Image (tube, rainbow, N blue to C red; front, side, top):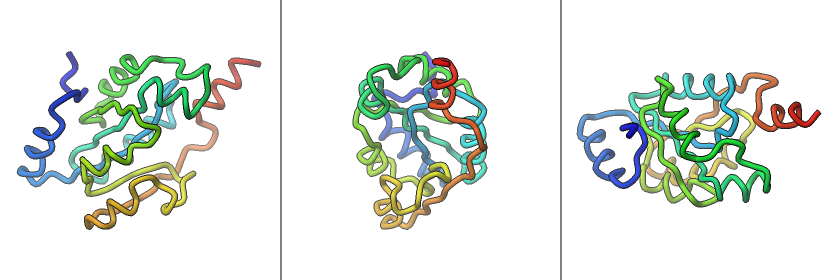
Length: 155
């Protein structure tokens, strides 16, 4: 079992990390068809704090967001792939379409999304700011997206 993949003891982990004074960074996504753009986002996110927690959309959540043909890679394998990346400290799979409940539970010091998001459109922005945290965007690498890869496979 990959110790980076959190299933039931998230609260215990958070208490331990906060007691150690760790700065918690959170980002989320589907991470279907992992690519260089994802690695860039995760690397840059990790630079902003001590612990990077990645919220991963479940398979049913990805289907609702991306359509019936997604995800290409199931949530167990996507979580394992993310957990194998050195910048990622923990992976938490969530069932909802958005990570709002997870963000409210984690109360990250910094919430991260790609620069294709306007700050105020980022789910959880208000909650993080209300808790004294920061919300930031990371500049995306041009030309990298799972949807682009999917479209190229079809052609």
